[in-house]
Length: 418
Image: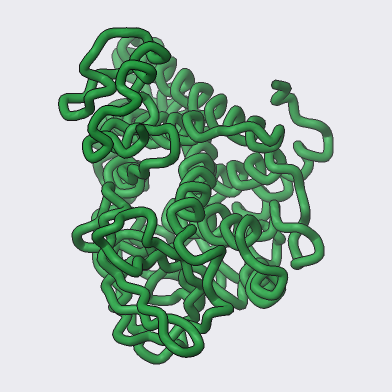
């Protein structure tokens, strides 16, 4: 793995940072207070080519390699202090566009990707339901086959960009009783009769990106809008989550770099006892911890991108990247407030907003679990290594290979991966 940037990659970083610092509206404090999303900022980002960093040229994108695209998303976070806007951009780039690229038919790609890249369409990933959060495959939204397509009935909530989205990737099941095997994925347009969305739901952080609910009431989706084969929705979702988990917080890494620079500058400027507060060991220790977290977050982000670029599985690294970046952004935001002291608590300094935004990443976007072939449905991808109270595979301390052999016929209702 080589994460040294070429001159072209560094030049692109500088261009994106300069664009974000100069072209995007930075009345962020007021928009955060009023929970206002600016469509013109979205259009500017699209015109800069950022939405299409990793989309092939034939669909209007830049066709960059994955590491370069992730590096560009990080640059956007460094230059743009609006964490809500950058979260929405990354959500579309990785959870929507990559899923269409991976599973869409040629007609679907041609119909939707150019508009998504150009900013004339906004995409949303409609997974979460009132009773299906981290347990994603307990979803209740039904897809009933009918003449010409499927009738969708159900309720999705906590959907990023739902009040504004033009296109939804929706996961629905023919029968909730058969779990993952009944799930299919669909591309559903906003103007579909029977689809309605809520207004924006006020929230603690990332307040500049709208979030809401989506309802389907006999919404007829044409058969040609099914994404992938019927019953393959679990596989579509798993791959989509690998992309989303890996890179949705790419811009947060840029935010952490900007946050660290601001905190160091303040620690050098602020004087107490006739010396900069950065000379006090307790403050210096916090700055060191922030730097370590930043470099750790970068490594796992880049490693996931490198593995996927090499065509290797990055399922574990994707989960690790999302966990580490969300945890580290939260902890570093707390340390930034500690260094700034009372000033950090005031909204006018714009330090506390990072903390509120980081809480959302840590507690709302982080917890999605999906069983996949070879993984324990109870414990997740680390089931061979970590004990779990209800899974027979992990109640024994035998080596993983021997455990699999010994339990190959054991109670599949408790461990769906056997």
